[in-house]
Image 1 (cartoon, rainbow, N blue to C red):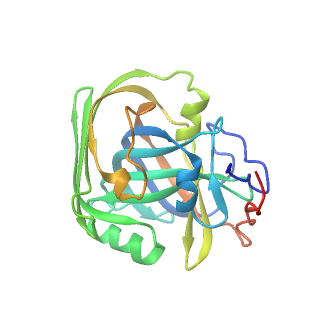
Image 2 (cartoon, rainbow, N blue to C red):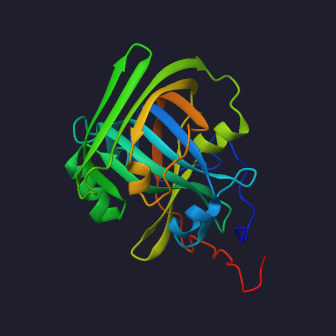
Length: 264
């Protein structure tokens, strides 16, 4: 059964932030990012999304992303970011969503990080699925290697080893490359309520990348089918500084209509 569209049309895909962040909740930088993406059936991911959202699609297809990078100097409000506790490797499994206001976003199924205190704060204070893992990011010229091995709360054996060779700068990203990287908010739920956190950052500096190796079990540990074949998109970025705003005033989600019996 095809997905029922949101109540409002999705906002346009934009390489630049479509909104301003009036209040700054968090600051951070995302550095040395590698984006791996596989096409998936929207029906496979719809049950994994928060209430009030449906899979965001491009030409009828949605995607699962495996994104490895270095988080750098996370800070609260406009205070200086923390040099140690706020800087660590991270690898996340993410899906693509749109809500009843037409806001496109990401949904994180897991976020492996190597600092226990940020993991605990993210899990307990914000109900974000952070996981404590043993991780590393190594640069060797044009080659970047990311490793992750899960420690707590599991499942044990969920790990990844990704190695890419950085290629030429992307001067004109395709519609798909904008769709996968230019995401200006996060959908989740908090204390039983839908939540949307907007973010802003400069336009992504993107590079083509060649995948030299990918051995991972994070996607299936996140409740998704095992990716088949090579990723349909492999990109690298040196990174951007990022600001997260607070949740918009309620009501923050327009209900998304669900299929009725007999709907095609």
